[in-house]
Length: 330
Ligand SMILES: Cc1cc2nc3c(=O)[nH]c(=O)nc-3n(C[C@H](O)[C@H](O)[C@H](O)COP(=O)(O)OP(=O)(O)OC[C@H]3O[C@@H](n4cnc5c(N)ncnc54)[C@H](O)[C@@H]3O)c2cc1C
Image (cartoon, rainbow, N blue to C red; front, side, top):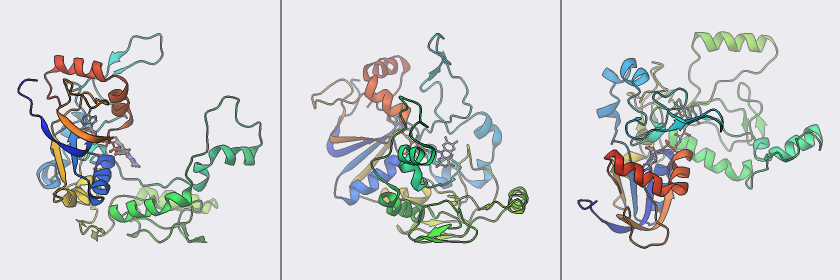
């Protein structure tokens, strides 16, 4: 660690720069705080890293999994039950952890569902609907401390930030034909109309409708038309190439931190992003420690659940593993 640089103290350090980190950074810098975001993976941008000429390379991205956390960088182990010895995961299956600017928001699909109002009060909902004895004793199902109405303005903000394409099912309590008949009231329509239905979903929708169901297009963070978001960032229309999951979007059409927020954030003098910086340990007492090279008054975890839990629960093990792994430490 002798060649490491100690950074100037800042107001907030954000660990991980995916959707969560980028949104927090935007809110905190707008509130007047200085923010440093530390991201373990590389810098990635649309023009340099997801250009249409090569981003549909299935060998590179789907098979060799270039955008995800590399086992050589950090190896996760897995076991099916407590009696097994956990073994290293060498190739990802359905669980594809992000790594690098934008996190999993780069290679996600972009289906953007809102929770239903009943999801926020699931215990009450199930009890009212199926009776007091319906839930097994000791179940952990709870009502949330917030409800749909309280979160609605934030869903709305996110949808307008990302240029979500969709068909509203309920605007201010009035049912809308062709939309999700179960959704909670939204203050206004989606910013963009739904994506066109290709052959398979069109046939599925026709079959479902013929059986009396109410099919509707899935809300998608894949822009159905060119769009300028409230921050002035311009998105391009989706080309229906189909390379969403596991791939970055070369058309600026799939919402990601890169296509919605980061172009504004990186111009903010209060914001600094540092890539290639794996946070190995968080010190809580303010005293200097081996990994305490980036000092701040507050930390915020923008890491996905597993990484955040690892940082909180196993800080010294991570630091020890890193010492063996020749990785940059912050
Ligand atoms: C293949 C795939 C498809 C998905 N499709 C959908 C979908 O259609 N709809 C939907 O709603 N959701 C979808 N998701 C889920 C959604 O993408 C994620 O919930 C979301 O992107 C998480 O954002 P995040 O910022 O919280 O975490 P992440 O995107 O995981 O970002 C965390 C960042 O922290 C960094 N990091 C972690 N640990 C450290 C550390 N110690 N030091 C420094 N940096 C660190 C990581 O490198 C990463 O960049 C999908 C996810 C995947 C993987």
